[in-house]
Length: 188
Image 1 (tube, helix red, strand yellow):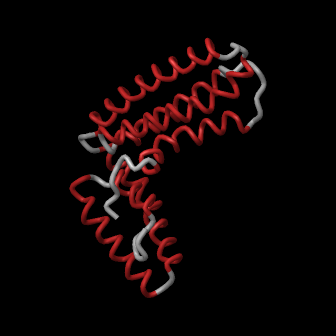
Image 2 (tube, one colour; image 1 turned 60 degrees about the vertical axis):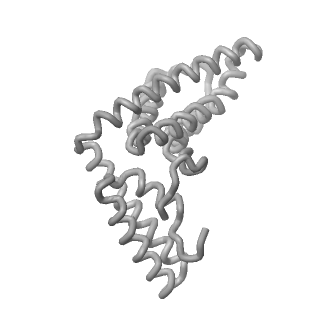
């Protein structure tokens, strides 16, 4: 990372949600302001400012993309990727049950690994196809986890943090995996 470059994850997050016609101008203005702040104040203060701008911008940009005309395409891609994720998870569950003792305790231990792997792969695939699809995929994963928590699919007792981990880490892995594995090139 260069000395005066803003946080890469925040850049990627903004790149993912800013509509294409405005992306270059908005990111350019934010990066320019970050550079000025980093030179006049500390880099830490400039990074905090950049993150605050990113966190303030994301909800309105997501809402804007939901209202835009491309939402149907992004939603369709997200649904397709979600179906492929379901098939991947089914294959992994089948492999686990045939290779490892089909005990429910074993499955409870391996379920988070399979879940995070499939959501990360799904996030990378969705980001590779279309940037906006990752947001919809994260929403679909979150809704699915909430429904499954409400239906109480897991029949053996688990600690309170177990379903909460699925609820938070699932959508986060969809959104962050493309940045971690550098599926998208950051412009920052």
